[in-house]
Length: 172
Image (cartoon, rainbow, N blue to C red; front, top):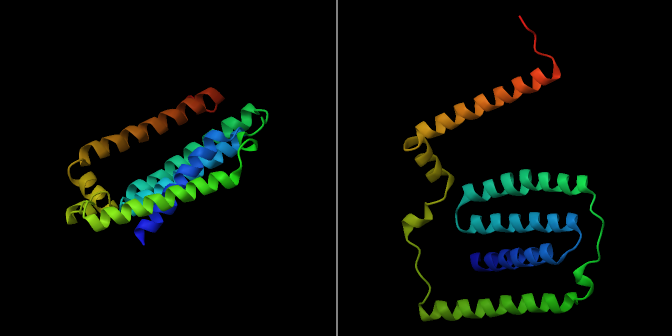
C-alpha cells in the first residue's frame, strides 16, 4: 500500500514541478509549486517524518507561497502564451504512466531479488514529533529558550519602532 502511495505522490511531485516550469502564467506556476510542496509533505509522511511534513505545509506551502502570490499580484505580470500549447497532454500523461509502470516493475524485481535494503527499527523513530521534542527539550533546551527570548525582543522592538514612526509614543 505504501509503495502505491509513494508512486502517486512522486508522480504528482514530478508532474507539478514540470507544470510549474512549463507554465508561463506566473499565478498558475505558483499554484503548481504549492501542489509540489504538498506532495513532498506527503512523501515526508510516508517516511514517518511528521514534523518535516507539517513544517513543509505550514511554512513553505502556507506562508512563503502567500508572499510569492502577493508579489506576483503586485507586479501585475502580463500573461504570456503557455508552452503547453505546443505539447499534447495525452503524450505527457502516457509518458508519466509509462515511468510509473517501469518503476513498479523495477521495484518488484528488486524486491524479489533481495536487493532492497531493510529498515532498522530505530530508523522508524527518527523524524517523528516525539523524537524532535525529546532532543529539543533535553539537549538543546538552552538554545531553544535563548531563541524564544531573542524573537520576543525582536517583536517588542519592531512594535516600538512602528509606534515611534507613527507618532503614537507618549513621552512621559
